[in-house]
Length: 351
Image (cartoon, rainbow, N blue to C red; front, side):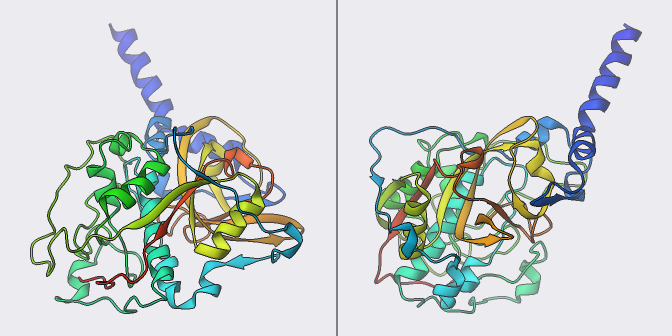
């Protein structure tokens, strides 16, 4: 019995140090990209890291594929949504923290909904949130200014029962379908008290996150919100997958705004710091969904611009660049989006 107890302690200790062991394997310069130690994952086990990987990979039946693509020679060498639609830059720039829930598929969807709703309505979103209380009182958990508009990742996560399994993962294309069929209400981030349905999963403690249940679906707005749940909903008119050709993805972003893409995360990605990530090395940790806002070229290497949902403390202040044109880790083969409705109303994040 004593030997069994000693064995268990040894195994548990080794598992808890997976992140440190992984960093020792991947630290330093990797040519096009560099690694660094991310203290937010200090001591995390491989199972804790896998909690973040919530994108279910694979195609869903009956989904239309949008294949429109400009001739590559006519596409610009670089593009960023915030430069084409500057009135929506405050919406695009906001980085989120999914915490210890595999909600990346819903979080990235909420980014697409916010960005495309702003674009479709000619940037008519009020640039400053409307505060009914002192924002400092309700935003102590936020690490950056409140965006002018945001949509509820938690509603998608908790209320779309056919999108997947909540914090245990979901399909990005079903999040888009849910937007069109059911509508999505506004919602700020944890601790913000902003929007109808704010995110309720708390940030991970220093000891790391443990797997928890998906938050219960609530079909009503927070107490004190000035609109009803049904009146606060916003919809899309169409949803679709995007052809995996880089030119098709570029054309979609340039014409309509950000898209959600899913890929397989390998352990080297956890240590990304800067540069163009260009190698899928190490153990596979699972499917992850992120938001694509554009592209460019760095030192001759073409890349995509993605926003992650692991806080601004990770990567390039929450963002990362990944090699474009080679479907690295499957990043180009599972991109989805929806077409936001124009002439929308209530485009203000009420806090």
